[in-house]
Image (cartoon, rainbow, N blue to C red; front, side, top):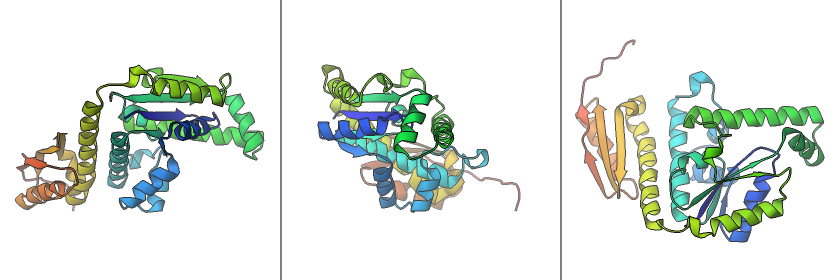
Amino acid sequence: MAVITVSRQIGSLGTEIARESARRLGYDYVDKEKMAKLLADVGFPEPEIQKFDEKKPPFWDSLSLERRKFLHSAQAIIYELAHEGRVVIVGRGGQVLLKDVPGILHVRVISPFEARVKRMTETGGLEEKQAGRFLRQGDQESFGFIHTFFHVNWDDPCLYDLIINTAKISVGTAIQWIAAAVQSSDMAGREEEARVRLADLALVQRAEARLMDVVGNDIRLVEIEAKNGVVTLKGSIASIRGRENCEKAVAALGGVLKVENYLTVAQFYRLGP
């Protein structure tokens, strides 16, 4: 069920390496365009996808209900893709979300800033100063997205199994390294354990996104766990009807075998009108 996540700097040739690795290995390739289609399939309009996807949010918007629902839905899709296996996932925090799951190779593709600027001027039709600004903004967006929502530094080498500097390593060599690593005996074993875990992780994210439609911002008072298809709800809810609605909403999700509802009903007092 080998899976590859690829984190890359703009202009590092990471996209080209990821795409060609997927083609040669016969894996599915999931990039921004494919992710946008999958998100649209679960109900997100294109403007929201463009607004939220891999973008560092303004401080006041980082915890908005719409953005959080988007993130839970995107994370569920990543877990489901990994569950299916034989896929290359580009960006979207895959190196963090799938960090401790067996059978997943995490790749980082980098290149010096000057080399990336040169590539952008030669192939992207930009002047040198324009290319520099474009790259700095892209790096800031990617760093900010990972730091804000996953609380890690995307340059932390401990997040990756293989770091490739394309200032020295060719695209062809990088693809050979990735293929050799993902097909090695180091990546084998514990497939069933990984699949069960990924299915449960996806369920938790789907349930989080679904319950936001039911309880809104009170989702912060609800704790969701999943194990072998059994979803457990804990925390507080404002009414008996709300408790029942939460259970029904989660039970309707695909892959849920049973809902154990331990939500307690509590009266909330809010300030303001």
